[in-house]
Amino acid sequence: MTDALATQRPMPGSAATTPLLVASNVRKQYGSVEVLKGISLTVNAGEVMCLLGPSGSGKSTFLRCINHLERIDGGRISVAGELIGYAQRQDRVFEMNPREVARQRRSIGMVFQRFNLFPHMSALENIWAAPVGVKKVPKQQALKRGMELLDRVGLAHLAKAYPAQLSGGQQQRVAIARALAMDPQLLLFDEPTSALDPELVGDVLDVMRTLAADGMTMIVVTHEIGFARSAADNVVFMDGGVVVESGAPAAVLDNPQHPRTIAFLNSVM
Ligand code: ADP
Ligand code: MG
Image (cartoon, rainbow, N blue to C red; front, side):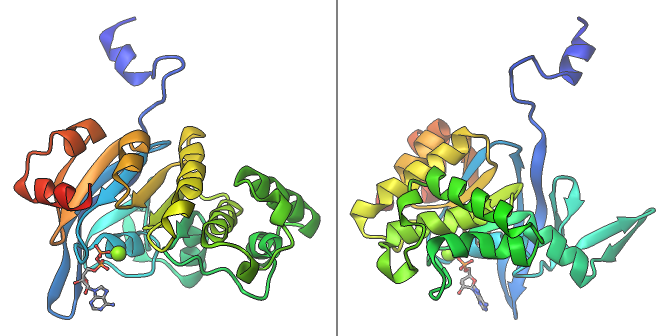
């Protein structure tokens, strides 16, 4: 095989590095305060990116921009080759209509620090409600899938429990199953374990590790350095609205180059 062919075809059995999320020079400001000052990064399909940084560095804002919860003021974000918020027709770019926005949002799952389950619905109902209500999946099919997903997060035995009867860690695992029920191509996690009692953190991280091993593409904002080291393909350190340092976990976490990265890691490890 010639070199040219070799570069076009992934090796058998090796993951092709297809960019799933590409952010280039993303800018966002609130009033006159610039919160994202030109963020550029790429997450390949099937990879996990951990986003670290001190409070106020813009991590949540960046995730919210990916998921249409905020509008960007500059740059572009694309997921699976499609611009977020903009449709391309012929050679022109248009703002998406609400239908297109809703379709795009459905393909991106988000798990928040607070679990945001519907309190009046059982764990299982929380999972099948959106597939049935929004995606028009037949109820029996959504129920079956909901049970499979509960099993996957280790909670099949609690299908009928209401959120108030579940621990924070169990609620967060239901929230993850709920996000998975929409078959997202990208899952965003915003400090998914920060609100949990320490003894409940491990179960949630284990579920996330399993998802990562199964090839889910994920961006995880977290202060859990151990998780980043073991599960991330790439680690990005943000501070003051810019990417300060990024690379493989071993490079960024164990051999950081920038003084701000070093100071941050010292504060959380
Ligand atoms: P992080 O998630 O890294 O802690 P955020 O993205 O939440 O950071 O916030 C980045 C900065 O943007 C902070 O200074 C915060 O106060 C500000 N900010 C976030 N959301 C808003 C908002 N809706 N209006 C005004 N300022 C905001
Ligand atoms: Mg945040």
